Every structure is written in structure tokens, then in C-alpha cells.
Image (cartoon, rainbow, N blue to C red; front, top):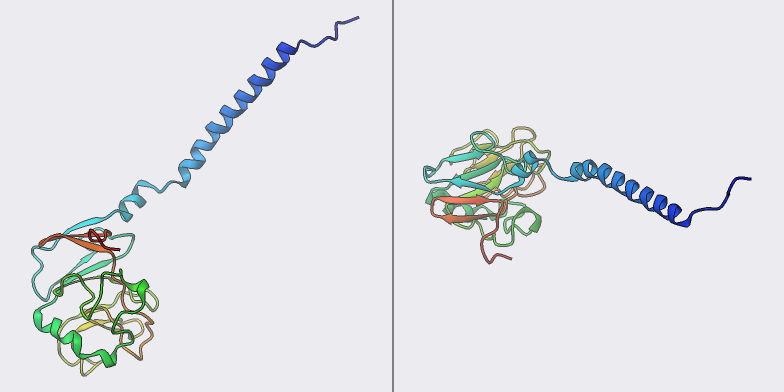
Length: 204
């Protein structure tokens, strides 16, 4: 008659070995899965802060991130140097604007306030996407009559559905766009450089 006794030590060894091998297999299988949840290198770069040199940006000129400069978080960023006369015009059209005081907190950081919607009055930083259906508005800084507005004082016009924004990115009344153009977080590193995607030191 065969010996049917069980060796407890052998059983414990086999059980422990099975558990260890199974655990290692699960860990190895989990690595690719966990890596797939991490953002790609390209995604990390696109969401990283971007340092911009504005030393050559003349009054009246605008530079667009996304054309000759990388986009920030997949969004085109516009940087415009406003001449003093255009800065002065910003206070004159409140009655024509839907949100002249920029009360919609989702459209700009808390430190962006006033008619200029900027840290420095002469430098405007905006996300260049219309808040209606995502078209890219045209830059129309000239204070001259336009077919879409005979009293035009400079700003942005969306050719897709006719939305209008002033040179602070504030939306006019009576157009499809519901909100002002978005202002991204940014800070000045010095007079000639700013960083898109980072709040100023001490900002809430």
C-alpha cells in the first residue's frame, strides 16, 4: 500500500513558491500597464512651462506661440505689445462689452484684473481660441472702421461666426462667443522674458 502521508514542509515550500512566482508575474504584467497611464514625453513637454523672449516685440506687434514657438498645452498663445494709445482705449468701451470687469474667474488667473487684463499694461497674453466654437480669431489692431464694426477701436474678430473681442480679449455684447478670451497663467522673469504656465511668485 502506497504511503499516503503528506510532507507538511514540502507543502509549505510549494505553496510559498507558487505565491512568490505568481506575485512576480503580476508585478511584471503590471509594469507596462502602469507605464501606459503615465503621460508621454511629448505630452509632458507640451504641458511644461515655456520661456518666451519678447525683447524684439515692438509696439503694435503680436507673436503667436504655435507658429514659430511651441504651443502650451496644445493651445496657441498670443503675446501682443500694446501701444499706450491702445491701452488708453480699453477703458472707453465698457458699455459694449459682455464682461468688462472679467468677473468669470475661469477665464483668467486671480491676479489678472482691470481693463488691461494683464500684469503689465502694455503686454497682453491670451489663448488664441474663440470661446464660441474654438476658431482662431483674426488680429485687427488698427483703430479704423471695419465691415463688421464701423466704430472699431482695435481687437480680435472671429471670422467663423462674427464674435468680436477688444485688445484685452474681452468679448463684445451681441455676438455668439459667451466669454472673454482666456488668459493663461504666466510670470515675467525680467523685462524681456516671460514664462507661460507659471504664476508669479506669491500669487494665490
